[in-house]
Amino acid sequence: MSSARAAAAFTCLHRRAEDSPMSQENHTLPEAGRGSRPPGDPPRERVSLAETAALMRELDDLIARCMRCGFCQEVCPVYGQTFREADVARGKIALLRDLGRELIRDAGAVDERLNRCLLCSSCESICPPGVGITEIFLRARAAITAYRGLGPVKRLIFRALLPRPRLFNRLTQVAALYQDIFLKPESPRLGTSSLPVFRPVTGGRHVPSLPREPFSLRKGRILEPAGKSGLKALYFPGCVPDKLFPRLSDASLKVLRRHGVGAVMPEGLACCGIPLAASGDRKGFLRLLDHNLERLALDFDCLVTSCATCASTIRDAWPRYRAYFTGHKRDMLDRLEEKTYDMTSFLVNVLKVDFPDRQAEAQAAAAIPAASRDAADRTAGRGDAAARSAGPGDLGFTAADEARPAAAGEPEGQAAGSGGAPPPAGRAQPPAGAPLRRVTYHDPCHLRRAMKVFEEPRRILRSLSGTVYAEMPEAERCCGNGGSFSLLHYDVSRSIGQRKRDNIVSVSPDIVATSCPACMIQLMDVLSRNGDQADVRHVIELYAESLGEELGEAPGGEAPGLREARDREEAGAGQGVPAS
Image (cartoon, rainbow, N blue to C red; front, top):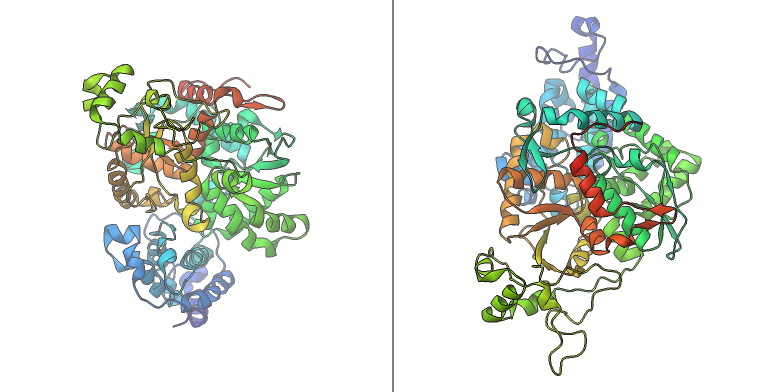
């Protein structure tokens, strides 16, 4: 049955349900006659029959393109763990073909099946007819939410917290003040802790500690003039870089200033809205969007962010709602569709920053005979034992090798380990004798599949002096976070994350880099739970550190150095909120 016919059937069947005595006693539209709501299930919002039917009709053309080929089974992370047809795109689309009747029969079960999805777009990327699967699921969730309403917890977060950035900031400060009461430290290197008291809710997840204060609260409004680039970029921090990883936002501003870009950040920016869109809360999403558009009425050339999810949401999801706006807000949505960038893409494709590939250093190091490598290790103070104890894949190459003078007949600047590319001016160099660090990269789903950005972060990583880049297997495979998915289905999320962890450790990295703060949370969890010693960092953090501390000055004053920002987070986590 097509979704249009299903919508008609839904309307007819639901009118019968509304006419029933039970429905007349309950002024909220019935969920499967409301008789199927489990005892103790909290009441939901008042719902809209007309809105539900309209949203179901929107699905008709989108669903019709599905060939039911089953290719989606090969790449779906959830299906890869459960092997249930209901968990793969084909099974969910089959459900949507008769959505009206299924909602009447058991709306809760439909909601559960559609929400067992990471929205990672892996299926969409391999679909032969190019079905817009992610858009289908978002619209289907909106139809279900229009029918069932939001539960009380989501309603509280989406209505009372996310649209109020000042309240959100203050509550984060209070949580940081008292977090030590509940946290049990787990991994000093990763800075993770568990929450034993809340284990029934968290499932034993290892989480990073909250810093003393959010980035936006510390910085307030930022209005800087354009520098040598002639550009002004509006920096959108996003919830996670703002509240949990403010050092990432510090790094982002430092990079912008280093390249002569004026940073602009208005006060009061709220969440980009992806949690609401993923939960089907269209009304709440539109309210957040309107809130943010009001604050974006500033002079800037483009919008940049260090959060892959925010970048994808602002560039792709926001403009889909332009029909709800007029005037300057609608014009702003048109601009953002063309001028929104992830930070790595902005550096490579807009600023055209030169990132010379320095991986020839690693190739030269790999060619150094073992005896020469031992000699270099002794020179660096590491000793033969340290060299022999290096992990799998450790090249044992040090910065002392990089500084080796050119041999006879070797062009200046092309000594073994230089790769023919001298360090860019202004880059901080590792101290002589320091061992090279081994870095791998995880592709965030929103960045690789939605934004089509995957080579840019690798170019940056391969340009860092003192760094050996190692590509992990299945770097593009979802890590299993999926926002609220990891909260509602942590067992599946953890299993998916374990596969990612196994791929990471197969290349023995010192650092796992990525471009999404949400992925950072997931990677920190799975590595910490396994006792692994790899650190988790954002690509922009690593690049900012390579620029040197002295390059973080803003036109109106000195920006905090990255080391100071990191120290402040670690020292402030769990300490008192400063007097304001």
